[in-house]
Length: 145
Image (tube, rainbow, N blue to C red; front, side, top):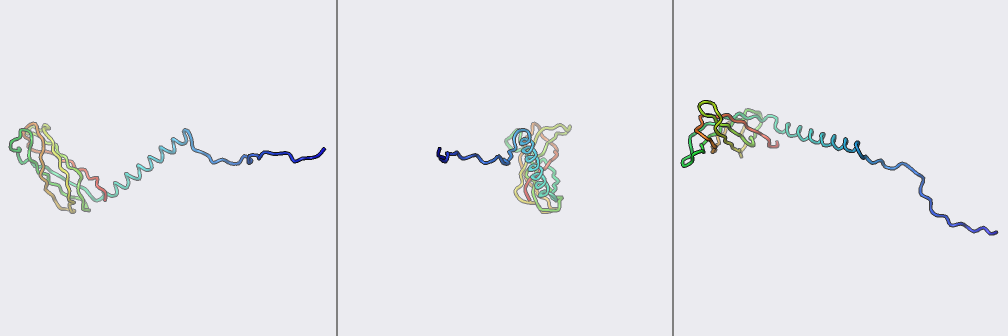
């Protein structure tokens, strides 16, 4: 008998190490941790950019708007009590009547930065169910550095 070379088919490479994929609960945990780390870094950056910016505000009721039953003229007085120039994004007032009941609201957005120690007066129009006599103000400063 004659010996003829037999046709051989290529053999697959020997089993080696495959790249491991992160699936199932492990992948979910990695994703949630990544999101939490990203959120913590973003909050830290935002807080650091607003350090040194604090605002104190008051509102004065100037009187009713002529020709309107439920609108009142307001004057917001915002003072930068911090160490860096900046501005609050929004100052919101809650208006009260003589007996201390909440009767209205008003808000103002400032456009110009206030220097440390300086005060800025901003007029606005609020809405009230009855004539208010005073109010309390809360300012939010969310602007970046």
